[in-house]
Length: 265
Image 1 (tube, rainbow, N blue to C red):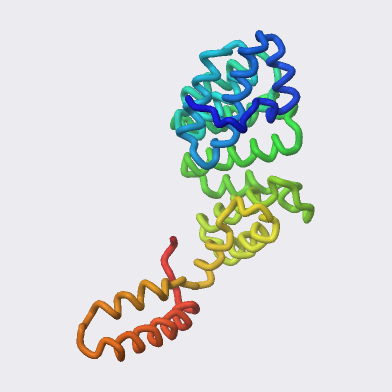
Image 2 (image 1 turned 30 degrees about the vertical axis):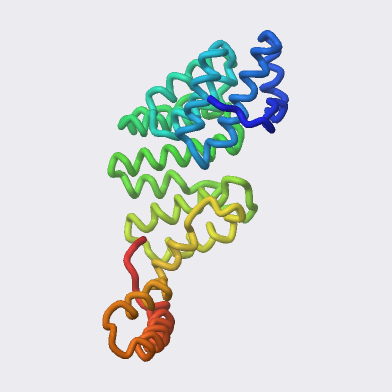
């Protein structure tokens, strides 16, 4: 696959670069460039990222960082069985537990929430750092919901991390998941409060907490331009007056509907 000229391979993390030292120099450079492309495209174009990960995998399948990258790329395109295989391979090579939560989430993706829940109780969880333990809690709560245990999902998410006022990279997602779980069991007032707390912590815009709040508050957003164009096309007579009426009417409608109830987006 084509590599842009401005990608040199030096952009990769120093720990990954250290792993690639076991390869011949030219091969290491090629692998590094493909790994850079995986990282660059994983969010915006996961299919392409997956393609680059397969190239890296063909070049250096015995490098743990390559297996991990291939796992995340497969995970991003919904190939959960393949992702789990790559994560297991990377874990065997490193002996680490960092991938345990995403491995459990792969089990959920494969339709085996009970397996994911079992993994949440394994000793590996105790070896995770705080962020990893929060991630595991999110996966476990998701598994509970998959199994129709909505109330248990709410309880699973209740933790010191949820109660803390400190903001961490995972705080917004944890609060959002709790709000969503509360909403599922009919605790709408509490859910609204937690969506608001999630929005406060969501500095990177990783959730749609603002949209969920708007839905609960009965706010509906209207495309004024689209409404105006619809008004223009209804009748060819008195077009100038019709244009003016459409613009004024759409603006008034948008203001009024901004306070009306809406369906979930």
